[in-house]
Length: 78
Image (cartoon, rainbow, N blue to C red; front, side, top):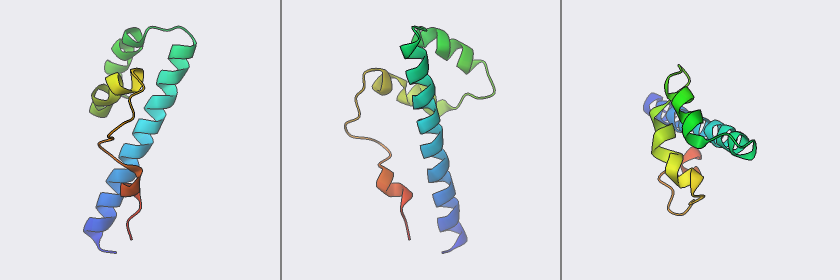
């Protein structure tokens, strides 16, 4: 595998792991009755925020998982 392919796979893995972690945190605050916007305000002012969170927020809140813009099949490249 070339270096460019390795770099691409590393970036894909990072996107997937950030998305999974964000989904877990979002689910936790929703189950505990914390307002999503309150959570996002705190998150946006922290070093833990990634632009992908705002990009995916509305679809996660609405539980709209149709037509993903990052299919998990992209994690598997040989």
